[in-house]
Image (cartoon, rainbow, N blue to C red; front, side, top):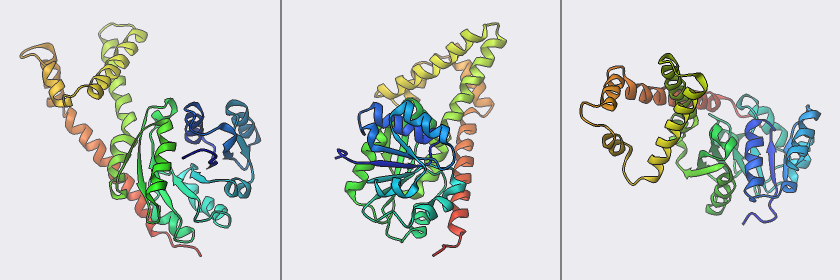
Length: 280
């Protein structure tokens, strides 16, 4: 399906590099069939070519015309200028993926010719180690085959789910922003261990491995997270005492609020793009 496909990245930042590296390491796309664009930083282009064997270029026209799949991977604030840069070269036969947080597929469709196949993709920062969970939401003009192609590409950086675009804000709140919540949990566990007299390196290892092990248990077990929690909570034991402190201090509710807040902000960003006038 992906044999002889060429993938172009518009943007060459850390997310684009992580995705390209994942595609190469997984054998999904050959490095010579990946084109990365950076207009102003020759050192960055050289770095990408030397580290990954991809083609890095200044020429947006060349990069887009050569591509079967174009991936928008610049900062969201630069999307309008980026679309203006590709609109004269991209065709409706090419699939356009966007990893731009908060930018609706409808905005991209309208900025181009209105019939461009666009799939919005939301990975998270764990893509850098091939452990992302990425959501895909198809735009108006996307075929089932194109969704399959997109999933095959994005699986190179982790797991994928296909959702409706109106669910993307909640996904962003849970999985897009979620790594930061878990880092905060690790940070807090580490802090508690250090305050209890454990040296920093050991405290970090304890916190990280606890979260990693619990995550793998939740992934591999047929039990729900709730059932797993109950299994390890003995009446009047240490775990119950710890959980009661979490309940008393709003532990679970804090995570729900975090997701709701992040989802609301994602919706606000999307609304800003929806309000922008379309330039013909």
